[in-house]
Image 1: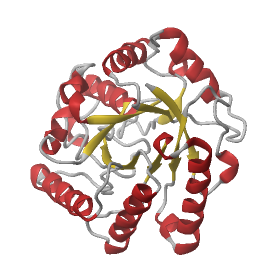
Image 2: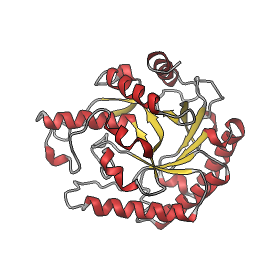
Image 3: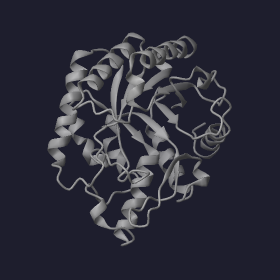
Length: 299
């Protein structure tokens, strides 16, 4: 397993030097639809090319924008995703991470989930068919409820939601923070602490159930969360914290990380998505990687 850190692809100052935080690789990430506009888009790929020159393509991944980037409905976004996968393939990047990006500002009670999943996967397969090569296209798992209670993207949350990918060339990116949050929310619903009506896609799930789709997972995101979002109390959640600062404590993260490492290949990447006050000089990510190596890494 190689440890990686994310950097904002529009800010070259965030690109760390190799081993700066005891990391072996990097992931370029952008968040908003405006980042797909030409000037920003070109800057993103200029910076990714700089990362490739430093690390080599195999040690760089790209995270496609998230906010207002519905590649199913929005042709412009879909064309940018096609172009992004093509550029990534030309640069020999490890892979391209994509969220489902099917957010809705209201409850999803009207949605046919199986049909909606098929719609998303069909578009991704269409894109994958256009762009051949070893650079993978990976779909990331979402938390069962969003952080700020404003939007929801609950199509691909649980391991079983990804079984539709089993016979395809679309891969899975497993986000440990999203899964840990999901476990915490499911427990709250089961204990009667939260209303089931806010969870259109929910089921009881075990802490290591993601191992049931282990052969589909090619890439990992890692962080912990603080606070549990609750629509009736108005509380929100924050991602990207060190496991020792998590609301649920560090033991679950140790257990999950240990099992990931025991089943991983040497060339898989785990990206530490950790929030910082200063992304040019990161304290939290360095401490989190140190924590990971000291607690659960194989010698």
